[in-house]
Length: 150
Image (cartoon, rainbow, N blue to C red; front, side):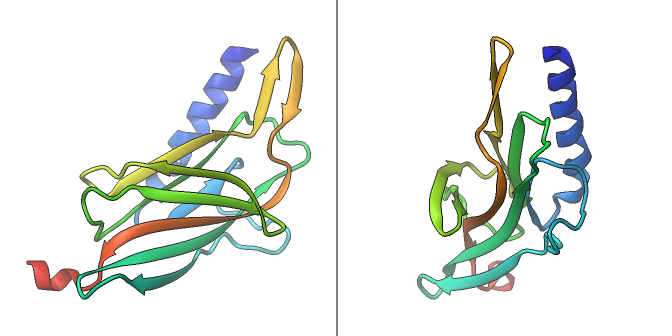
């Protein structure tokens, strides 16, 4: 059973890697699909920190269905103009209540990924960690005018 879960997790991650360019995802499920009327389109705003860099905040929706069988969910993306040395901050909320906070490093190519448990299984007992709809805030430090750095 553990091999099936491991294979399923690797398969899901492999399916999303080609779609991770210049975007963000938070999924325990496959593909760009509609769930409860949302389209997984991120909402993004940039908050200037000084004349050179700013904090880019993206908000995506995450849905863990009642019949979810995947043990992992993940947030991933690629930042085209990331500032080296700043991690990505991830905040997960359900009904405006904080559920989970994390940070992850950004690679030299601007890619990042954070994996988190959606289900916990031990001795044949499965416990849901995430169930229902969530809002995921992703904070990235970016250059405001990248064309000035050529």
